Length: 531
Image 1 (spheres, helix red, strand yellow):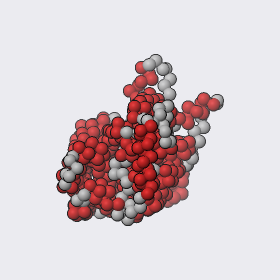
Image 2 (cartoon, one colour; image 1 turned 180 degrees about the vertical axis):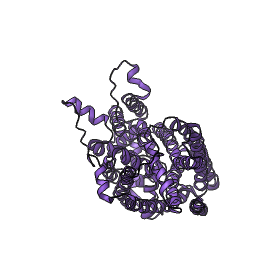
Image 3 (cartoon, helix red, strand yellow; image 1 turned 180 degrees about the horizontal axis):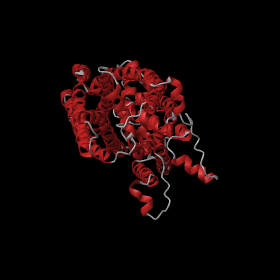
Image 4 (spheres, rainbow, N blue to C red; image 1 turned 90 degrees about the vertical axis):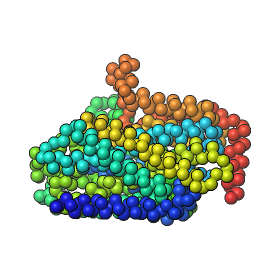
């Protein structure tokens, strides 16, 4: 009976989300309505939607995992770079996207360089986003695994974990694809607004409840916090400049990664990633878009810090209340606490919060992927007089297509994580973007900061060089070891996008933009300036 109340809370959440999403169908009858909400969304709704995109299920469980295992807030220092990057994006990219009236961001690259750069960038985005989204989804099933473990009175074996993970991936993806394909970006944003509310309610209950359960309260929590509490300057154990440099670039949570690496990561996710930027472009004008973007970075810090605090509190709680059944995998500790210690109803609310973060980030990914595929490849091939109903049909079927691709990646990730329990969540999810998004950012920066450098051929060569450089220094598949390097230099995930950006710019800038393309770009800029 206690779990009946939890089930009702979760079913109520699904009913509200599906109801809101499906209700937006009538307002999504045009391409601009489906993809950008006719650029009429209030800034505060855009803000909530940006937050929902950022705080995935990986953050909901990954940030507490970081706090539990590290017992400090070193992960939260990344907020420095995220705020800096949002300011840069608001003044550098958003005005250009509004001025050019783009729906797919990669349309701007065709204006500046040509169709080949646009298509290659769009394919790079779609490939990377499908992989990144698929790897996140299994996280929402971790709590389901623990529920089964409680029911059967023992640990769940790897094969059972896989089937539970895979089942959750399929259900969550299909439900999200249903309302996203019907209601478009409006469904995404307004369901995100509800999901952020569920998320905040979950945090608002969990933190005081945990504190109340720890003997000695905050004093006992302070005793488990480890140095450095927030800033890690990456001071190496050895002496010498090389030891310091190596430590800076191979350590994940340092102040240098927070100021530089995190800035480039966020410039890519919030400046040239169709997933997040599409939400920004739904605002009524570029000022409201910039305001929502910058404010989201400021609001993000206390939210992420609260998730990390939950992990620290969990450490203090289980030191005071040892439990032989406590999972060995640190990412399962928070779900274990939810299932074993929280009262009925609240347990359902927090579980709904996990599902909300998964569905919030997934819905935008599906809408953005469908927009890129349709706008960059399919819609231009339709007759000029094709009705809106035909164009919307393309967008909806593209959404369904990507839902199935994400399910495939999610099921593979479920198998991998079920059989590799010691892999951390955050580096896995954030690291995937790092392989390709630096190259995307490099091309966009070249397009914005120069007028005469870069061309289709040079950009492709540069992007490939950027991706190869990142793969090599990340030692993917043991590349360095296979080449005979005894002590590989493995770049940590926050630095991958920075490296890819600089390599791409360094190569692409060697190529001159053809005079005809320069003239065409100037003519388009002049036209937009008059409007």
